[in-house]
Image 1 (cartoon, helix red, strand yellow):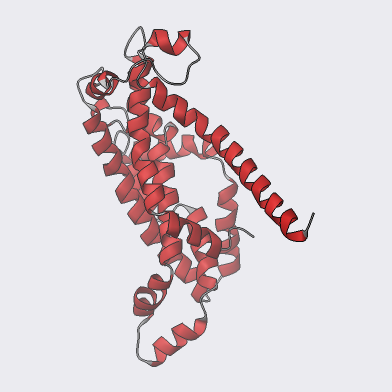
Image 2 (tube, rainbow, N blue to C red):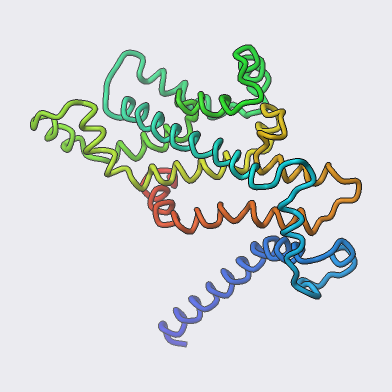
Amino acid sequence: MTRQQKKTLKTVLSYVVIVIIGCILLFPIAWMISCAFKTNEEIFGSIALLPKSFSFQNFIDGWKSAGSYTYLTYFLNSFALVIPTTILTIASSALVAYGFARFEFPFKKQLFALLIATLMLPNSVIIIPRYVLFNKFGWVDSYMPWWVPAILACYPFFIYQLIQFMRSIPRDLDESAYIDGCSTFRVFWQILLPLMKSSLFSAGLFQFLWTYNDYFNSLIFINSVKKYTISLALRLSVDAESVVVWGRVMAMACVAVLPLVLLFFAAQKYFVEGIATSGLKG
């Protein structure tokens, strides 16, 4: 066997392995979509992936929900929570990253070490003091527990990601801008931010996905059904009926996943570039 044949065989085997792994990973999604068109009897009584008939009745009934609100309300609530949180996180994290990456100030190393140390704190450790604090502020049953930490740059993962990216940008650009009369903020706004576009998109995509999928914090801080996010609405669909119609639940799960899928494919280019250039691989 020649070297070219070996190379071709290796490539073919690599693609076969990738396809097999891809099919395994996509099977739960395919099963969820299939169950959205099935009845309970068909879901639990048959192992066939494809439904016997395709009807959108589960989507229609599921959208109406079991409570007094439709899923339109829950989607609007989710976007009202997620979009400001994402935008504010990007803005505040970029400003803090700019300070750490470009300036010298007292206790910089110690503060940066403290920033990195907060990454090691699991949510289960800080959830009780956060709830007590937010309850005293009167923020429980509102979206303030997400918006205010986003304004105050309380997400160290994104700060660290942007710091690593900003350090890769030559300081000569800053110095040239200062010579031309640019202020500190103008250097950040007109020089660095355009170069950080891929990293900012990557951080925004991460924050959008994590906040949109967040069930635990939404369960803790939101009490009113009219303010429920989509993750809580899916759970409400399970708890509201004595006999769960799983076809409706799966139908709404498909609808809930759709914005994430569209966002991921739309921002995939920036997502890959941001991961590759932010130093996270190392």
